[in-house]
Amino acid sequence: MKIAILCGMGLDSFQQKVLQPIMDDPTIDIVGALVDCRPRPSLKKRFLKNLKRGRGGYMIVMLFKSHFAKKQPSVSSREFFSSHGIDYTETQHPYTEETAQTLHALQPEAMVMLGGFGIVKEPLLSLAPNGILSYHHGDMRKYRGQPVGFWELYHNEKAMGVTVQRLSTGIDKGVPIVEMTIPIKKGDCVSTLRNRALDSSTGMMHEALQSIQRPDFKPEKIEQYGPVFTIPNLRQYITLQIKLLFRK
Image (tube, rainbow, N blue to C red):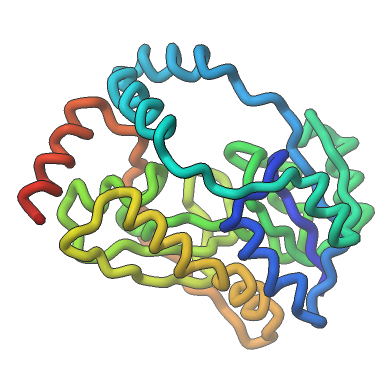
């Protein structure tokens, strides 16, 4: 099976672990990668944007926490693909006809998205016969959007879902190819739940690629999708911390 990779300018440890079993599988041929090199908005612009939406307080808390958090190991996409002998193309215009032609020339049967590209749209969505596979760390029947694990804890869920979906138009409104349930433990906070969900799901993309190769595989569509969640405000963040304190 021929696949192409879609990603941003860097690959973190989770993304590298996702790619490892795919690269080791002799039935899968990575014919190329497309790297989204568009510059990210500055920290100031992102902060002002969230401030206008009433989420400035939460952003300040997250910036403070990230300053003291342990940095996750990552590598540039250019370095990773070069070291593994995978051809790649960098672009700052992922949705132009030129980019679509570059991918089309690779003739991938499926594409794997591991970052970048924002909310994916045409012409990329329908370029490969098996579409674009992407992670959503949540159950799309109840939780679409972000942040990972936050809203499940906020609503006192006992478990959270992890999905590899075939993307379609809309936020997390694809067809699930592989799904997993992660139990939520009594002492969990957002970071421990998120890390456990990431660690437990690195092999799901490879499993999804194996599934879509089977001629008898028919993914089950979701009848009703859940609401879209987004970055919380400061009041919601404080409310969650109080809930977690009582849980412990």
